[in-house]
Image 1 (cartoon, rainbow, N blue to C red):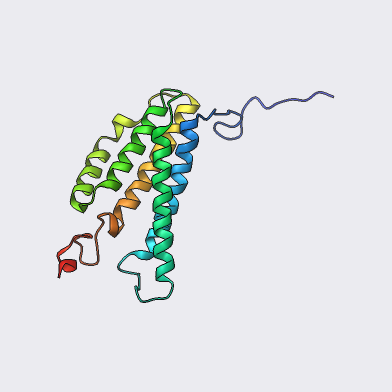
Image 2: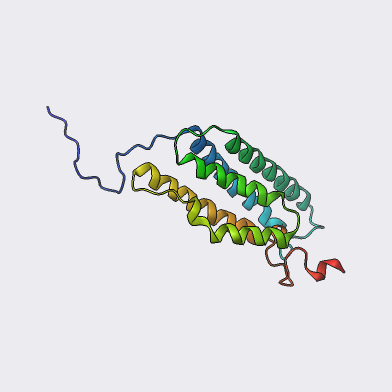
Length: 172
């Protein structure tokens, strides 16, 4: 009996394995931590959160833990040695997000994030190899998730009064 393999794949990149490096594996963990942080921060938004609700303390604790996990994931990606050229942009993206999270002023954070978004093309890997295409997809997902995170009120997004977390309504 003869075994045959399909010559033409059913789906794009079927049968093509993309070898992961340590940086890309840790970056995948970073994306999971970023998504978990977003999910943990959403219940704490001023428009929906009730600080007197019994579950608020747990939600706040979960958000703090998720943020710490995100920061440790960022540190892990930054500390990892690059194994191929596509690893450098992933490390730079992790450095950029860590920098954004360290900025305390919402206006400054929004400005730096806007500048980062205007220059995404400088970080985008170039090429058509399946590994490069996979990294580019991961980069796009990262920037979409960062945009969601930065739109949350605690990170400078619009608050109930439309002025962000440092709006005049909170100063009163």
